[in-house]
Length: 293
Ligand code: F3S
Image 1 (cartoon, helix red, strand yellow):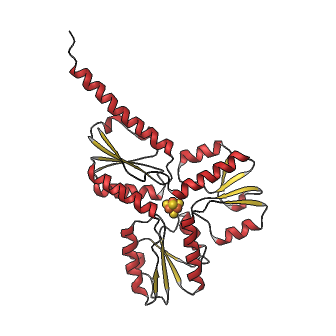
Image 2 (cartoon, helix red, strand yellow; image 1 turned 30 degrees about the vertical axis):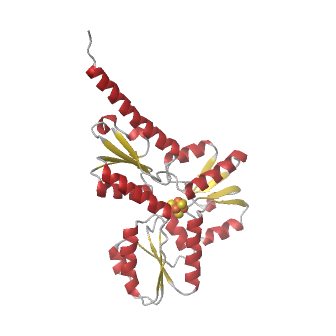
């Protein structure tokens, strides 16, 4: 069996930075340290951080004192304001690329533009972005939603960082017909682009594709979507335990990629298991060809 690992699989720069910053804080002292929402969209990593003392708060109102970690997705402006008035030390792990979207959105909102965010309205990153234009942005995620927008005076379009380029181009083209004054900012993260195109290249070459990452991770689900376009057999798994030896041994070439919030140790375990399938098969072949005298 041939295993092809896609380039750029696993932690992106922003998630790695958030993990490193949080680990540093946890190693110093783990008295009352909370993250606002799970630090990353990966259950196994969150469990590991929990064992090290990191608690997850779903709202800033649940935290009384100590340190609060803002994850790479970022938060709305009003939460920063709230934190500054509380007895809390802020550890801001917002990805710098997300921060730059906040700045842009705030700048254009102040100039009187209607902000249109292409993304999932329930995703924390999108909620955070909208919080930099007083929650007055319009979030769209489908062609219908784009078509149904009213005509507007001035529009500024931005994207959730994990969108596919195809979707961003299609929706922003429809939205740009709603005004004669439109500013379009492709804010899709380059890490996402690179991961998605490497995934596509590998998926084209293999019989089966394994995508490792949280079942609720939006960027992992996009990799699954892309893989399914180019490969018939796609397996979305969270950990090595979700892999079936039997299932995989029927393929000759298998591709592998992982979402931006999948820790290295989980990827390694999967690769090791797949290599073992190779070894087991080799042993079986050797045994089959042996002549016992
Ligand atoms: Fe940042 Fe891009 Fe990752 S926006 S959090 S480096 S996917």
